[in-house]
Length: 137
View 1 (cartoon, rainbow, N blue to C red):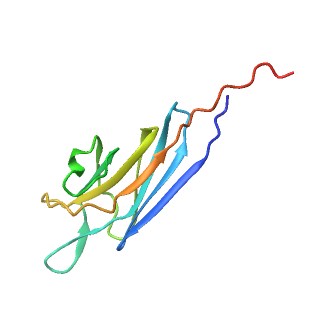
View 2: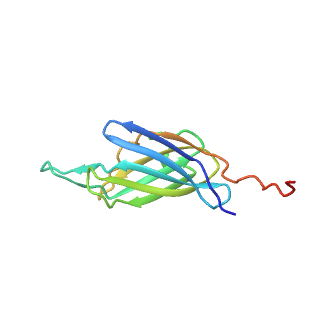
View 3: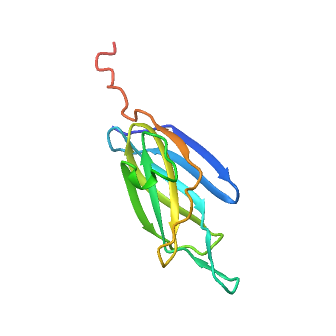
């Protein structure tokens, strides 16, 4: 049985930070791959230059996320930064069906955390197809 699916997307912009979501159906029962996309921020240095941030903390929860509760998100991940400031960056994770709020923070090499990004709301719909008709006449 080949699974085919629908694609949902949401793109939200906060100042210069672009954070989007694409939900793509997968073969995993009742879950979907969620891909976040954003523009890598810079870490300002005293001489005016910028370097890449050290890592990101990404949270997903069924309750709304804020700067105060992001680190308490039920689902959370750390991603080490690979992109230079201004370059697009992504993170993909499997989530079961449901409604989620997602956001992230960036951290520099000495442990300074940014404010929380914009918070997006996504819906992972039921991705399990119905049973096939077996008695067509």
